[in-house]
Image 1 (cartoon, rainbow, N blue to C red):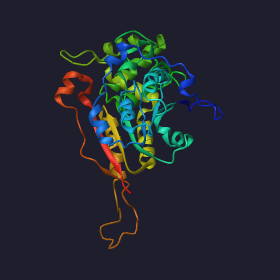
Image 2 (image 1 turned 60 degrees about the vertical axis):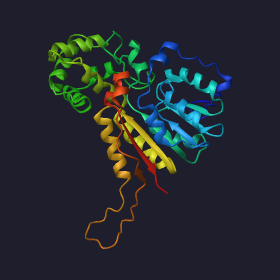
Image 3 (image 1 turned 180 degrees about the vertical axis):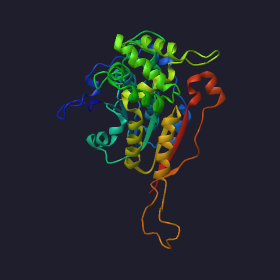
Length: 337
């Protein structure tokens, strides 16, 4: 089943069997490698007959593994903000009919999605945060400066303003804040000033325009492994898609939806995401917060979850196979009774 949560409320869901799904090109699916796939799926302890959410469907690698384990009586709800990834759902539903539902929406809205689909709770949630290799590889999406493309960066290109809109309208102070907070860019003020000066002469509308501007502004250090515009592009992408706000809202919603014994697994790829996940998990696992001098608990607070193991990093072998995995970290919690 395919459901577009962004359609009017009276829109009818489309049953997969009644719609033609375009299978993903072979070279795309073969080149995409799910990071920490075995560890993430094993940590969910998938139960036959359970209801699970893959909140960042992408090419469907994680969802496929969940579908294999839930059995014919289970269900995996596949959520993604990017309508383009619906084509990968066709391959999944062809192998597992009646087990999968695809929803075009943000995982931060999973509470409304779950209730709309008629479920009263879920048995597990998986989030694989950040940018997918497919999105990065499509020049028309504007995520990468490796090839020229429109400076877009939206996960859903039909909604909200693009990165070019943002740098055309934000003040120098706002741009500097975005670059510093979301990109951890130390040269944020210089870059923001250069953007504002440049846009007065000509609008900045392509990825290569922006990348060249940043490189001229701060230079390229000898021997540096990353392009000088990398942090700028990361910051703008996060701002355009409100990624950190999505993480905060999504983790909270998932914890509240989990049934007792249900688990949530989150794979993050940089410190900003991981910090939010770590803080949210810690807050949900806290019990009594009464002052130490209080002889008897009066707050009534009880922990909602328990941590399952410690943060997991990819093995050296996985990093060798897939360098993108280098910065990944997996954190898992389990809902308490």
